[in-house]
Image (cartoon, rainbow, N blue to C red):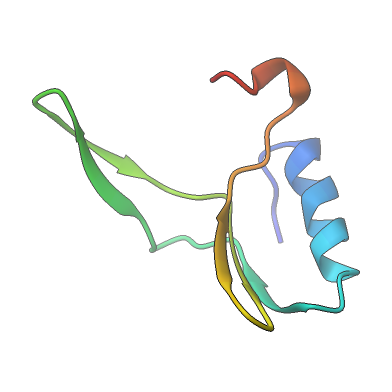
Length: 68
């Protein structure tokens, strides 16, 4: 996988070593369509993770960017 940040790379390592994770992807064609005011936006998540009991959308952030 190619990562946009070291934080994403670290998250990938954590997910790779978690026995509950069945599948993890860094989707290229999955997005969430939403509106910010009148402007259409697309949210592309960093990871979609399937575990033994749930599916998660993950957006890891460096501690200095948590409020972004």
